[in-house]
Length: 117
Image (cartoon, rainbow, N blue to C red; front, side, top):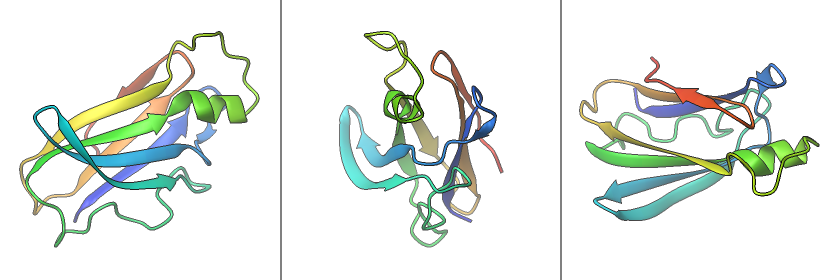
């Protein structure tokens, strides 16, 4: 099943194509970069799953979404400093046989997430 993400731009009502994202493994306060990627036209990782079922391990992870960079690139006038710069989501994977989908719904002023399927 694995790990995936999807980002929707709620300001424009579109997928967040072009947003930069970084995936980390975490242990306590330490974070190790696994990969960075740019979301495709559907607001997803262009390579598909971040981890497939065989590679996903029990543990803690972090996804960091470059929200300010994305909205600036879309031409949105943001105040300085921005209200949201990078959105960092820390989450745990307890059951590697299940799919973990981590969607982000985001605007320059708010975001929400949940464990999807």
